[in-house]
Image (cartoon, rainbow, N blue to C red; front, side, top):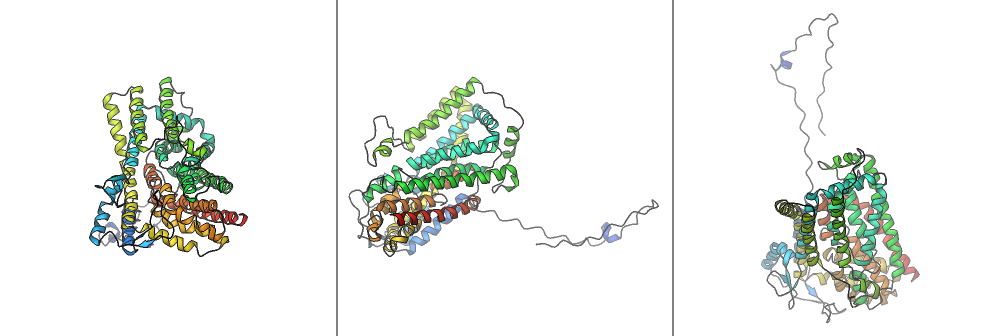
Length: 533
């Protein structure tokens, strides 16, 4: 801390009105000026999400050089067979591993997993491993939001909604989080949440909150549902299939965990939201230019009722989001179990179709909003450009996963987990199962991919500890969900904070106490589940 030089008190003015005494030459500039206090050193800002991911990629690459390569033999469904792990020669020389590091962003975008070698590269023949579909989905959402804003209807609708709910903003946040949590629990609502930032960030700002409230409502709201999944076919369904048990096994404990953790999530976000609304200086993330003006505009009196065209445009925007949710819902698997034949009216869309849904919807809304061809195309391209940064972040996160995949060290981590789980008794087994899954959750943020890799190995270990396989599935799912609330290798987190313009480090600082609360609650409930059988 710098020390300011002492200042002598000013001489009092003469009582008789005589002019003040002449200053000594040193004070008039004839002598050396008093020493100035050293300028305070500016605090170095935390790296951006892109820089963090580059650092993570280099760190993961360095670890992959040290860990021994190994693999399990797999069955006809591509699942590893327990007891078949063996060391293999690394498929990468040092020169090739450097090439993998350099190409990781390319592989993260459109890397292809070879059907023969299972290696990922841009020139392989096989299935898409990269995140090109999500990349295009984010850009399409950006175009949709920008065109919607260009019509003016979205701004007017948000301002009207914020004015109508200004005194009950907490209730709106709670409803949003419950809806997202239910969707996360029953169908794994995750990457799809990226479409909602363009709507909820300005709404939260208009209600007098900050951007972190929007991030918490979206990421934590949906994430806690995934963490307490009940019948999610992409996590619980796949895991139950590989564990050869019904999706219903372990349901009572998962329902309890979902209810408790959702309530805690809502309490955490609302507690912070109330604090920020009462005193904006307590915001963890601060405010960007124009953020506070939204809240001031909302509080300046009644906003005029919406006109017919605005209502029509807002209905079209709302229908787009509702139809998106309908199009991805795996209704047959939710009601009939994993692997059930889809209903005739079930769409089963993926991100490719969703991207075009938002592109087509953007054009329709632009036409209904009477935008000229130039205004429509300009808004369309502007929106894609504004969403390019979070889309690039998602690609880099996927590239980190490719590095571990191509080095063949993921199975090595899984084998270490298998060894650790067999060395404990019934009591701590579920807690240990939760903890040992955490490292693999960092490497494989995809719940379906994680379940396919881990569950064939971990589920049979339940017999050694005399616990149900349903409990093992519940512990694994909680571990995967807990990691997906914060790790930089998942598009949901790094893409979400980038879209909301919230620094990743500030999100971690805000979330850290909640992660600690969840860690204690999960371990306690898993221990209770093991004790009660």
